[in-house]
Amino acid sequence: PLAERLIGISEDLIEKGIPYETKVLEQSIITPNDQISSMLSLPPGGKAFFLKRLRLTANTPFVLLHNYVAYERCIGIEEFDFTKYRLFQVLEEKYHLELNWGRRTFQAQAANQITAELLGIDVCSPVMNMKQITYTTDDLPIEFSDLWFVGEHYHLTATVKRHRSKDHN
Image 1 (spheres, rainbow, N blue to C red):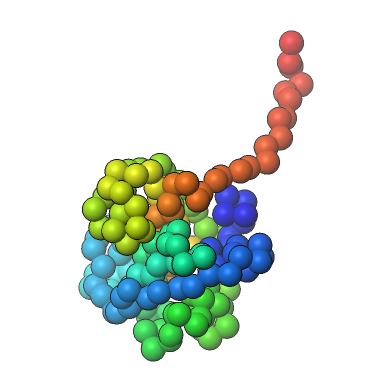
Image 2 (cartoon, rainbow, N blue to C red):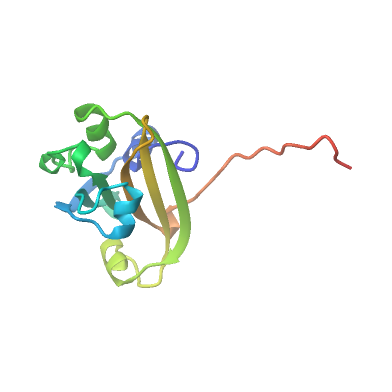
């Protein structure tokens, strides 16, 4: 589903009946760098809620998540316990934001020192990096994600269909 529809990692695990645990490593209000500010369409000096988590299945880390949320649209979000709440759940149910669509980019990479340590893998082990910008129904960006999946636990499958042109040989 990650390649086909706007679904959170936790929602995907719940749908598949896979138990998981979330460890919050950091959550704070920050002034993000220019790149993230631009992706979230923040004004100069605008604030973002930063959430860094590690998600585990069977006591094994499988994804490291860095989320940045446009703070002015969800003031007070830093008060939630994200070991118990899912980010999309909070945005939709507590802040009544209608998440509508997103743009995801996938790229295979080698794990750097910090990512490897947190995921419990060797430096330079394969990881799948996914970057995503999530938009609300008013087409405003609300959240930017930067995620690293353990390579051996990540498989991307897509259903594709061939459309033939009328002038085929």
